[in-house]
Image (cartoon, rainbow, N blue to C red; front, side, top):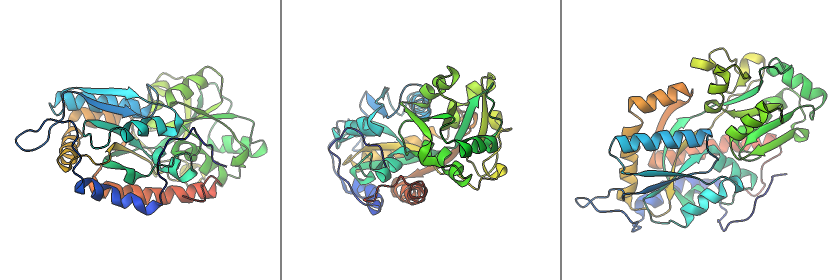
Length: 343
């Protein structure tokens, strides 16, 4: 059964509505609060960037680095990043809802939005907002403390087959999201009764990692940016990553699930979402600005260091990509028994 959150007045829709989002934005004429510049559009002095997770999480790290680059490139005067964790992402989306037509409000877009809708924890749809761009694809890892008796992914699956509640697992920021899928899906293939797992949701993967290091939980599922520093410091052991092939850098020695006999490849992304009805010129501005920012050496270094994959997709193409990703995730959630029948 899906875990529900406190309700916020979103409108439920079917998957097909994802495709309409970019087209609706291009047809909209929302006033926003930006200055006009030579008959075009440019950001106001302050741009609010909402992150639906806690400080230190992968989304938060990406938002702050991207904001710094946008400022350094003179593409925005001031990017103010605010963390709105909780409600399976509803708190952040509520800010966008209250900012309809305002091109000076942006939010991180992650695959948790899609899984939240599919599981019923979110009634929002992409068409209620403006997808600006997909920036990167990300991968989910599974880690334990360095002194854990769990040796690898096969060992973890064997222990949990014998007793699904033998080890507690931390995920962020909600049950049923892509981070949860990232560990539950391969474990189910490994014969584990994933419905009986002890899974604890945290506001961010930074929090779940701290809980792991403090001995409060035994295993953490998280995206790659959250494990790099701890792995380099020798504090954790990363058991598996859901990429098709091994990653590089600090994670070069980490085997994929496939290498260990679990035929799983993950699919999840990070991007930028704006309120519904922003001016077409504002959407065009942010697409161009983000394309410029993601071509800088600073952003490429951030992507490489955190073992993300560059994947810039904008406007209508971004909406279509999200639609396809939603389809893949609903299959995984159905297999796990977490799919909301109305999604």
